[in-house]
Image 1 (cartoon, helix red, strand yellow):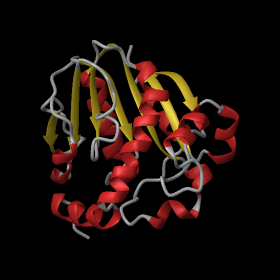
Image 2 (cartoon, one colour):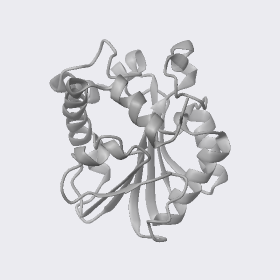
Image 3 (cartoon, helix red, strand yellow):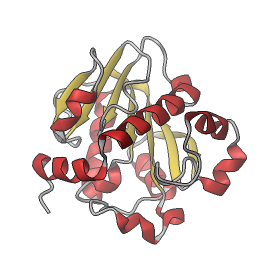
Image 4 (cartoon, helix red, strand yellow):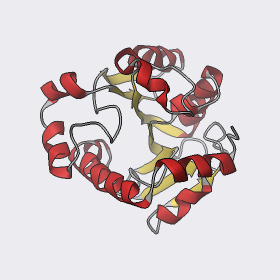
Length: 222
């Protein structure tokens, strides 16, 4: 399969229709407002690697929002004021050294070409982060997802909370938070779905151990 921008556009147009993208926006509005916003200050610069259709960036509140994605289709879904760069997340040449307070990425690393590419991307994230900046990552945890992990054609790299924490440590990040179980595997999971259910779910960490199949890691650049 073509893994360049054209191939990605065809794949994601098939996977996410307009209705499903609208539903994801509503879910992420609840996720950001109820959980991730607390880690982000009003004056922060935030970079979203693999920003998709703006599910995270459209709802986070901060001074500067930057998105990078290989799929050029996503640009039309981003709010005014978001800086978008079409390109490879392993090459952040568009972002200067030590200018970002928070680097965020969700459900991206498993799509990269190799573990070396994952390490390169995180190395680039470390470069653009200010000292004391945060790297926040979430994604499917192979320890709990199992076989269904491979039901998506573009999943390539098996990642767990443990393996990612080990990589971050090798790049001199300090792990602030590691949750093996956070959100359900996909937005097609049985629970939760409605935004009010998402907000309730995020207030009940014990439920994460029942339904969560995605990891969450937060790490600090020294």
